[in-house]
Image 1 (cartoon, rainbow, N blue to C red):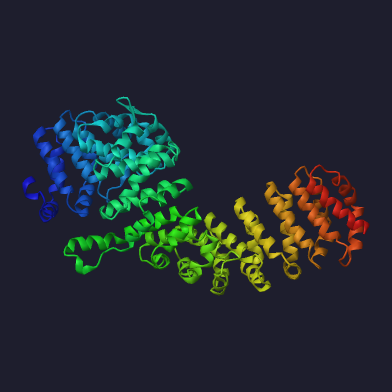
Image 2: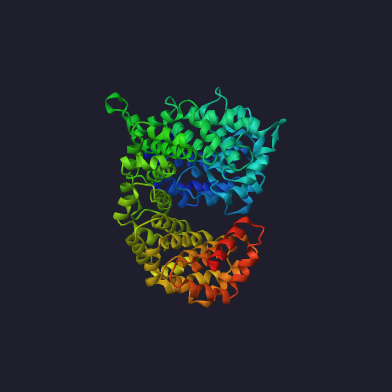
Length: 631
């Protein structure tokens, strides 16, 4: 059987159909079977698992994993190795759920104990761990079972395969995991600290796979804060190594992995972004990622073409990700990226690709570039980027919606020429619907974009926004548990209530509800910034011609303004003073009655006190207000 199935998928499938698997498993588990027989059974099962995904499914359906794990309790090393080899093959298959390794708590500790048995047990167990470590829960289980201490010394093994599998283990254990990363920094093997060992594995004379994986380990440790971003091992070793991986002469998979790891390394650090952008002409080098597959006539190898076609979208995704990281903070880098051949066309094309990952990466790249005032006014306008962006926002999955709506926020800033056409294409309705999302980031972005849209806008747009939102939804947002949503909603209200005719118009239709909302917030438990923003809205209302009356006839609100004038926080005092100044301004109709009413409330006494304040702003503002009384 063993010789019949090696390398022959058809034969493997035939044997499985004929019911060989339950029989092999039966023999494997029989105490009466000789060790040689049990070992041969494990070898044949391992060979069957090497076939198609369907083969692996058939093996899993026969409960092969518990049987093999049971086999690991045998005293015979050859049998243990055969079981581990088969387990390794099954666990690397995408159809095997990783959790099967963690169902029994004793399995992990038994595997840790087997690590010292032979170089094969080391290779297979490390490979099983690195394939089954998905996410923080698995990392914690392995870490708590002593994975770091048990695997560290394997990095100096005489076997390349063992060193490589141990390295891969660390790259998944440390990913986005501060606990593991902080531990790794201080572990030493034969008197050498792990970061130094990783740096040695980065050198150009080492196999590419090893260079890339150790760069990943150092990247994860750096992102988790265990290694500083200006440490020589990052700046002089890891970053240049990853840039090298992006070059033309590397294999397609290496270029993808190199670019994605580099994007992650530099994502939040402006110095690393600047450094990467000037290393080996990286920005130009990445433009090649879009030229796959190369012209068909030049390709003689059909298999290669098929491979390139399948993976070309991965290259585009990696390039967009890296461009997004490079351009995250620096204006000069953004300019260089946009000036790279056909860059804007590529992004626009990327927004409508069938692959969701490419679409997401293209939107990320666009978002990063949209932080530039200069580019919003030029390239973004020339390429009418808003069109495909609005299209992306129609029924996209949440992760794309979040980045696309953040980009839209930037395109709606008042100096952006895209603002008009976006409005005409029905953006208000779309953004109002985002504010009702369960997803917090989408609510924030929806209201943020509306806030940007309302800034210095015409009255019609402001009315459309209020109509689209509905008073009910506005209240919903003002009572949102997230302070960002609340602040952006107040920002929106403040932008809606600017310029006198607009203030009067909006307050004539929505005055009652807005005053209610303001009262609600000033009475609630909110931070200083929220209250200050709310008082500024009141100051805007007080600037209206007819809107003033809504404050003057509301004793509750007047008492609140008076209270905040004597508050311990100067920002709140100042905001309350703006309200008073706007109410008592002399040149306006009815100012005398308003002044009298406020004097009776004791406002003038507070103004006298404030005119002696040590805070120069408060002092000036109080003196100016008192002059209105004297004029």
